[in-house]
Image (tube, rainbow, N blue to C red; front, side, top):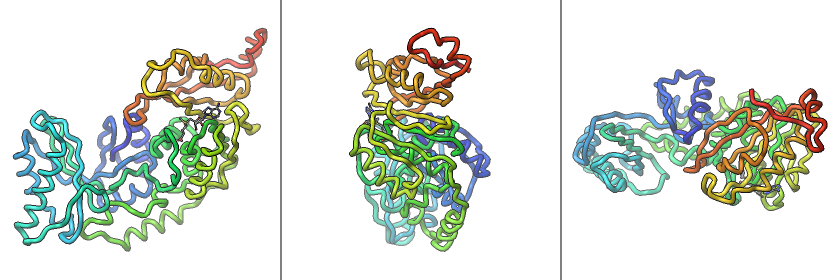
Amino acid sequence: MTCGLGSAPWLAAELRALGFEVTAERDSGAELVGTLRDAMQLNLLLRTGNRVLLELGRQHALNADDLYRFVTALAWESVLPEEGYFTVASFVNTPSIRDTRFVNVRCKDAIVDRFRGLTGRRPNSGNERSGAVVFVYWNGSDLRLYLDTSGESLSRRGYRKIPLAAPMQETLAAAVVLATGWTGDAPFVNPMCGSGTLAIEAALIATGRPPGLLRSEFAFQHLRGYDDALWRELRAEAQRRPVRKPPYPIVASDLSGEAIEAARRSARTAGVEHLIEFHVCDFAATPLPAVPGIVILNPEYGERLGEDEPESPLYRRIGDFFKQQCQGWQGFVFTGNLAWGKQIGLRTSSKQLFFNSKIECRLLGFRIYAGSVRSKYAAGPDAKADVTST
Ligand SMILES: C[S@@+](CC[C@H](N)C(=O)[O-])C[C@H]1O[C@@H](n2cnc3c(N)ncnc32)[C@H](O)[C@@H]1O
């Protein structure tokens, strides 16, 4: 299973909760021993994983000839239909290879040559991930061949219809929601929601709805011997899972009416529109439920850590919002700009590392206390709450 850098602990936790034994945790993935049926099920159920890979073999390999020999030795005729279509993708970091496209072409040639040698016929191949997908992982001399049973990344759930600037990937959003500790039993408020990814993933988590039900196309459907009846059974089983009704609404707001319209439409497609209250407003005007819960913001943060403007009035205002309006809540800010994160002006209770594509980010957590802490600072004009580390 692969996932974004930083999401691996959440992926491993998900796998364990589904009853799998995780045999290895990697920086951007986790491993287990399982069957093609397990792979189909994981494509349906996983929230934080990007791809479900099935290993076909591994080999010590130093150059392209080693690759070719190894690939031709694998029994492709038992996994790829000869009248089908496949593509090759790769991660390559080995000294003898300068252009990773060469690896893809060499691997494709080896597969095709094996088919031709056996039957005189061959499957079609190309760059589209619309059929079976072969994945080459080659790091140093460690060469591994996989079937990518997902094809398109599982982050493409299929609910996002209108593209907006800087949306969070769905699988990253799911990991971030899980990292807040939210289980659906308290209010979840997401000001600055943009295209609504955090709120929609939160709703899917709260209801226990398997995200893969939203998608109709997976690469395993193009493998030899694909069992459509089994797939329909797995989907029906997933559909029969009890849908929990969260006791509190999820609140999502944004200054942009266009963003809220896009978020609402995505929530409708995902089947969770009725669970989310949408508001067009400044983040500080977001109506908070009376019972405290989790409030999470993902403000814009520019491209690089600390290389933008040193000051951010917006981040300072987020600190004020937490202090003045979110007493008793757990506050979170997801940002790739640590310098701006400091402008929030509150002590963090947690800092969790994530990557948004290649940008190093943090999920900053704040415990926003009222009561005794307030009385301690009550003398100051703005001091209604403080945040302490735990
Ligand atoms: C980085 S985007 C959030 C992306 C979001 N997590 C997603 O998945 O699409 C930041 C959002 O903050 C909104 N925003 C900026 N300033 C705001 C403010 N003062 N009040 C409310 N929303 C604001 C922008 O309109 C934008 O949609």
